[in-house]
Image 1: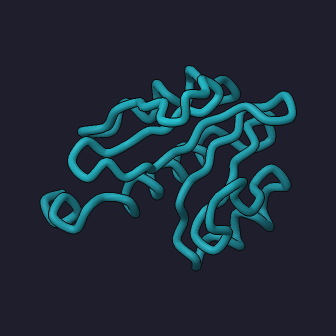
Image 2: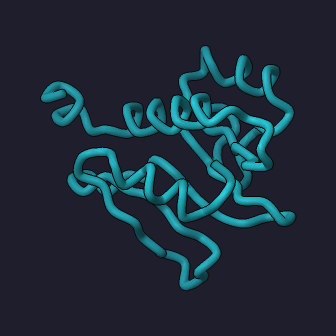
Amino acid sequence: MTERKEVITYCSTFPNTYEDYPFRDPNWCVMRHKKNRKVFAWIFEKDGCIWVNVKCDPQWRQFWRETYASVVPAYHLNKEHWNSLILDGTIPQVDICRMIQESYDLTLGKKEHKMR
């Protein structure tokens, strides 16, 4: 997964989500939950690559950063809870999907999380 459209398509497979462009800048796309409007993926291009900011459990945050050089503290977000994935082809797709799934789960509202 290295293209913006691939990330958006994958994020769209999660229940009750939508694509949004809140900054009047087409470079920045966010994927949100419909019910609580929380963002679970920030998608943008920087330095010639697509980047995806994802929320992560603090227990896993450092593991991902140490495992892949292309997982770094989040660009423009709280570095304690968010990582940036630089989609340069070095992170296996299964791990990209896993991190996006975790971000989706962590940003669900309490009611929605109980219902799942």
